Length: 389
Image 1 (cartoon, rainbow, N blue to C red):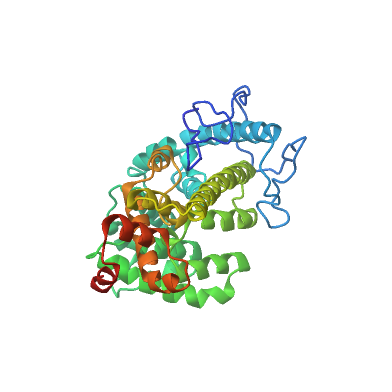
Image 2: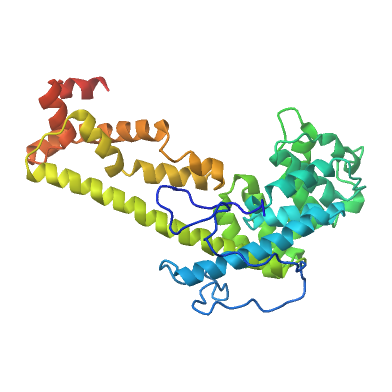
C-alpha cells in the first residue's frame, strides 16, 4: 500500500486522525483482489451520504464537512480502488495500452497514488518498439519529457516526408496528430522537427475539426488554445472527470477512484479554507483590540500580524498548488511553517498598502497602525520614504 499518498496542504491541524498512509484510522479493510473492470457495475452507496455523484454535473453537491462514517467509507473505497489499479499498472506489458493508462491516470488527477508504478513503466517504455504508431510514439515522448526523462525528438523523423509534410497515411489519424501536437510544446530550442510538426498538426487538426465528434472536437479545441501541461492541473482534472464517461476506453474503476479522490481532497480543502479564514479573522480582531485600546504596537509586532491580514498566505498557497505544484507530502511539508518568500512578500504588500494610503487615512482619522507604529517608535520620515519608494 505504498501507493496511497496524503492530501492535506496544511498539516497543523488535521481534519481527522490519520494513520501513516494519510487515511483515517480504522479505515482499512482486507486487501482487495478485484481486477479492473470495463463492464458497468454499481458503486456501493454510502449508508449516510450520497453526494459523491457526478450525475448533476457537480462534483461536490454539498459543501458541509464530512461526518466520520462518510470519511471512513470514502477512505476504504479509495484504498480498494488504488490497490486494484496498482496491480494493473505493474502487470501491464502492452506499450500503447500502458502509456494510455498512465496518461488517463494523470488527466484524472490521481497519479499521486501511483508515482512508483508510473516511474517504473516509463523507464521500461524506453525499450518498447511502437513501430509507426504516431499516437503511442508522441504520447511516450510527452510522458517522458514531462517526467524529466531523456527522450529524443528523432523518433518523429519517420513520420515526416522528404517534402517536409506529414506522411499520407497520417492524414486521418486524428488521435495521433493531437498527441503529436501536444508533444510538440515540449520541444527544446533547437528541435526544429517538433516546431515544424506543431505547425503541420495545427493546420491539419483545424481542417478535421468539423468532421469530428463533439467530444473529440472539444479536446482538439482546448489543445489548440492552450497545451495541457500549461493548464491548471486541478481544474483540468475536474473537467476531464465529467467528460471521461464518453471515452471509448472508459474504465469504471478509474472513474470511481477519480470521483472519490476528488471529493476527499475537496473536503479537506474546505477544512483548510475554514482554518485559514479563522486565522485572518483573528488577526483582524487583534488590530481591532489595538485600535480600541489605543495601543501602538512595535513595527515587528504589527508586521507579524499584518502579513496575515493582508491575505498573502492564502493567495500564495493557492497559487503555489494550483499553478504548478501537485499536493504531495513533500510540497505540503514546505507550507509548515510558511516559506520565508511568503512572509517577506506579505510584509512588502502590507507596508506598500499602508504607506500608499497613509495621508488620506490620517485626514479621515483612520491612520493605519503600521504608519503610527513606525512614526512613533522609530521616528521615520514616512513622506520621504514614500517619495523615494
